[in-house]
Length: 305
Length: 305
Image (cartoon, rainbow over all chains, first blue to last red; front, top):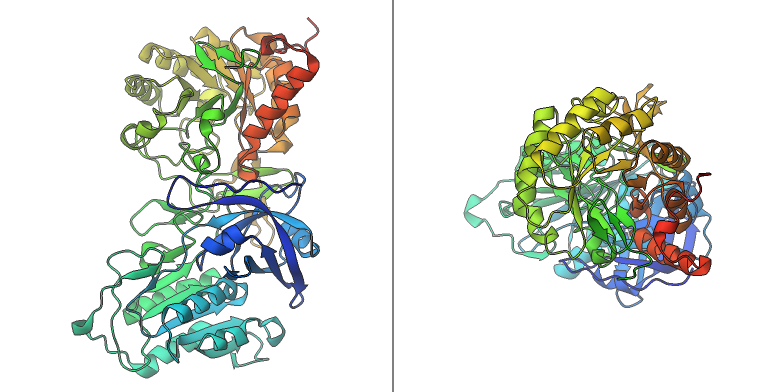
């Protein structure tokens, strides 16, 4: 298949539909793979939290594209990276792709993680394959706020074998707390347990007098989000991606502590661009929002999960 | 305009016979990011109801072999929001825009048809008597010749615009419904809407969708849609717009040979947004290769009489 011409949007986002060359497709663990794709157009414009929509098969089955979050984008090398878990037919086909083959992708799609200028100590909470887009986020936070300690990451995996990205997160200046379901590495339990404990231990005092306005650097954020200063290393914003129970727990912890949280959601989708209305998530204001177009990253208070 | 390829369907002039199907194209803006939608024969909007509709809870999409089950539930902003928010950009297009309408009651259909008839430049109304994903109205009107006749008659009385009846495949005799619609004043017939299907979650041991049944679309339904176009062509004299699983120009040619005067692309746009353009190009080449002077020569040409 010849490379399609890049498609330019007439609106706020550029969406490209193109054939990108696979540079690396390697197995990280039993079900988890890491792929590097050459697509300078997307690498130059992608923001953390956005995704690409991949056509896994040239044929009619599986029919739909697969939405996979962008785990890293590098403008210098013109590459983007994805880390994906083999769960069904589409990802099974993806796992068999070889270096040098091309992949029909659409992107970057959706709205990513906002990084407000006022943040001092963000917490990132990831579960399993949901850690993938958080790597790109960690890099972006590190770039935006050059500090010795960029924040803290609570990352949960099913076992030690399935952990990935941990060195990278530490390189980005994050304090790393790992947990596993089976206790084979770090704390045995969920990353939300660690988040809750961290917040309780610090008994964050929200100093309403020193409220900073959240001038955004990357991505949109609703105007009512306020970043409040706390004590030393007190969490002032939480980012999360992972299974729905993890996101629901993060939402509840964040609401209890009065900390804004940004959640990356997942839902079955067809078009990826907002036309089919398939990937609905209940809005706090009534009705539904679309994960592909209004998200996948939502401010926790915007959505019912 | 390429005269070989242009077609007039009940007074709707189209430069080519390739349209996009309602519910797969929203109000055009998403796919306008990928190509100039003025290249299409016509566009059909997402189904409109009198009042805004929030749609069904997720999951709304489920993939099947070469198909998709959807349970969107006619989510739409309602006719007034359509007029103020969507019509301004739609009215600037140089191609016909057809509004798909839906109602809970016959009176709803009458009211919405009357309201939309005030829009200068709207090309036609496609009357959806075939949506399988709503409690009231929708498919129920399209499963019985008498109620189909009643709805089409109400719309006919409310508007000067061409009226296209969109039929459901979930009937014993599609010809009878088509005949009833035409006798009530339908100027054209479009078919098919989605086929009633279902999926079961084997872990939860429950149907996947809240409404149990959902609408099947995609390449899997094409042979059924083609058969129904063939049957309706024999039963009525009005133009037919054929749709259901069209993904290639060859599919489109089959529908025209079966009796359709135009075709609409639905699900295939989700997989490759450029599908309608590929179909237009391939179809045009086919006409040239076959030495066909006008697309009219092809309509129903596969019938033995």
